[in-house]
Image 1 (cartoon, one colour):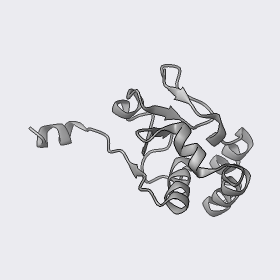
Image 2 (tube, helix red, strand yellow):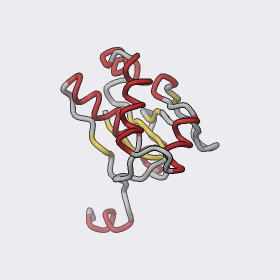
Image 3 (tube, helix red, strand yellow):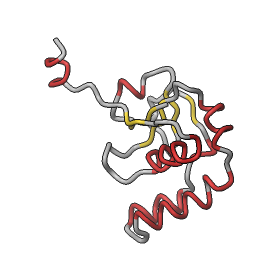
Length: 125
């Protein structure tokens, strides 16, 4: 299992891509997994700066992840799932909160999928 974001077209176009964000791009044709999607109210509070990243994570873990069974989520998503949302790697985002939760509870690794850039394509030749 890995995570990525919609701008990584390689990830978003993969048949194992699963959106866990409240909104998705119109062009996205993959699955959407509702249990991990956060309410708009929480998204707006985080984007506006009304809550800190720490408070956002605390609330997301309590209100969303607290009601889920990590083993069931993993089974429903699948071993090869790529969890997608909007934020670029390194930005505070709920997909990485989900990744840490799965790692903590299930003891699995959930890494960020790297974007294949023009520079990395040249270097691999």
